[in-house]
Amino acid sequence: MKNKFISLLLALVMVLSLAACGAKEEPASAETKEPEQTEQPADNTPAEPAEEPITLNIAYMPNYGSLWSVTTAINKGYFEEAGITVNLMEFADGPTIIAAMESGSIDMGYIGQGAHKLCINGKAKIFALSHISNGDAVIGGPDVKTLEDLKGKTVAYSSGTSSEDILKNGLEKAGLSMDDIKAMDMDASNIVTAMLSGGVDACATWSPNSLKIMEELGDKGTLLCDNMTFSDTTVSLASWIVTPKYAENNADKILRFTKALYKGMDYAADGNYEEVAQYVADQTKTDYDAVYAERGVADWFTGKEVAAGAADGSIEGYYKVQQDNFIAAGAVEKEVPVADYVMFDNMIEAGK
Image: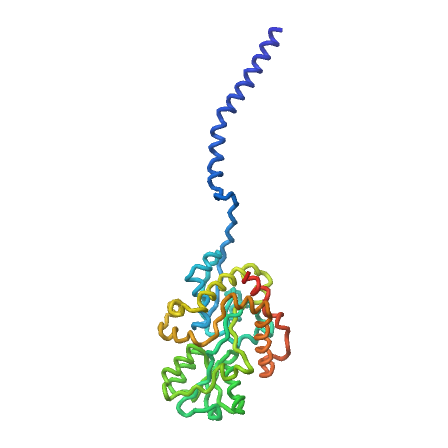
């Protein structure tokens, strides 16, 4: 009995000791929980997790139309808010941008009117409309005062771009064709040099080069036609694009980029032109006044307008007119459903 009593007593001591140890640990336990409680929002609503940071290589051309929205979104912090780091990379024209995207060096890019034919032909998908342009022009030198005067003259242009489109439209209006002129295919910067030096009689190009040429030539130059000349039958669009493969595998990245881009469009389309022109001038390292002069070369859409237009079908109508004109010009062989290459769902979702 004595041994049993001693055993029970020892057992009781051990239990009490464990209880005492537990009592001593309670304050420490309470202290470890306290920081977790103070980290909760005042309304006890859990904080939303931040989106995973991503870096995107974005292709642009050195003009206001290409950069007005994206540089605004960068400088106003809209991409940063979305967890996106944007690396801007300069290219001369849309077809070159699409080739770079196909190589994998570019994620997304901006194109003007001419390169849209490549989208129709399956090379790229359009995920956002940027604007309707009026920056393309055919300009005559001292001896070319009308479109009819182009016959037999040497004319500089860039094949596969909006330069070629505006030139063909102008020739058709005058009852001419490419066979009636001495067409010289060259890149955008060489067109300016050739025109101002008198190396060619006329040229077809886009803003800001069209504005620069007209300013430098003064009364020796003649604006033969621009996009507005054909506004009753044609539309000149500028868009943001990705490759079909990228669109299939990166829908979330495209949507995040579009939402931030929309914010830039909302800010830049309805005024703030001085501020936006400075953003563009800083990126292109060109004269501010020349960049500011480009603000009138397009109908700039807000993100809200693009989302609404995608929803009500008006934007699809723009792209349908564009495609019909490409088919009529022989640049596209057959009709393709616009929804096959224009991502209307992305445009609509980005506006929500």
